[in-house]
Amino acid sequence: QVQLVESGGGLVQTGGSLRLSCTASGRTLNNYNMAWFRQAPGKEREFVGSISWSGRYTYYAEYAKGRFSISRDNARNTVFLQMNTLQPEDTAIYYCAARPGTQLAVTPLSYNTWGQGTQVTVSS
Image 1: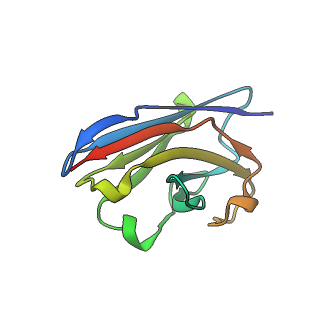
Image 2 (image 1 turned 120 degrees about the vertical axis):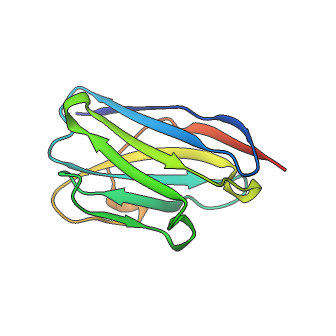
Image 3 (image 1 turned 90 degrees about the vertical axis):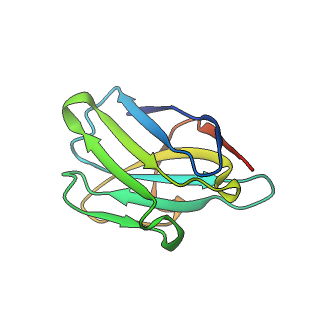
């Protein structure tokens, strides 16, 4: 079983940037598609973006296109979420998730392994 730990969250001003990391242990991530989700207070968990096991394919939610970028380093068992031009509405807990297989997915139920989340707060 793979375990995921997110890091890199924090407080940033509007327009700033953050880079989140998700490091896996217990198993290599080579055979897992990975995704980032976020959940704001009182809201449902929503899809941010996903990346294929090879890193060749990515897919983003509409609001994330052009501002967020997902990458991975399988040698380090780590997935990254680079977030630029952050806005107060990006404030949420950000989670990484893993699913075995070859297809990218956008729903939380498609992922069977989750990290504990990291808080991102964007001040106005």
